[in-house]
Length: 206
Image 1 (cartoon, rainbow, N blue to C red):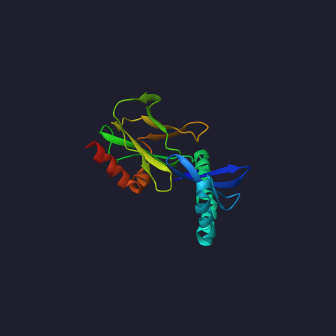
Image 2: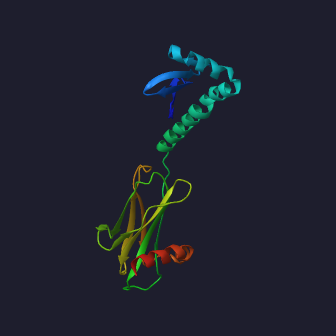
Image 3: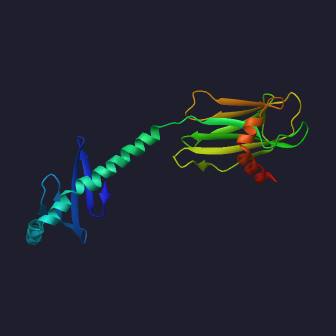
């Protein structure tokens, strides 16, 4: 890791901190955590290095830099690597924004949440045929716990017997998740639970 003129290196899973002091592109003093004292790189700087080594409090602070700088960065790097490997399966709900009657314009909402990473593909199907018109995709939103959520809505006029399917593909899934909705099914409970989301979806269209 690098911090100003300090460079920390890792060898065989052990941390080594090397702090280099440079003036006019020439290194004149360095502190190697394996040595524990300042070392002059030129004869002219021997006195400066000696004076710095006499200041025990300052020297001890610099010795601790391997813990403060390198180990902290190492933990961050490990956390980033672990996070990059984590995949969280999405939760999918489908519901109409309004509980209207047949042959009335409506908005069907596919609400996908709690997934990671953020890359996701969501498609709509009607009776097995993909719908490409009348689709509105809201912005990807962070949940606050590094997972994401998104709304993908389909403008439609439901007909008796129509079956709509939200098709979700995500890196965490071995195969796509599909959730169906048809006019005949009872979605009243789910619609009530997600009234706020449905109202937001309508606001995007009308």
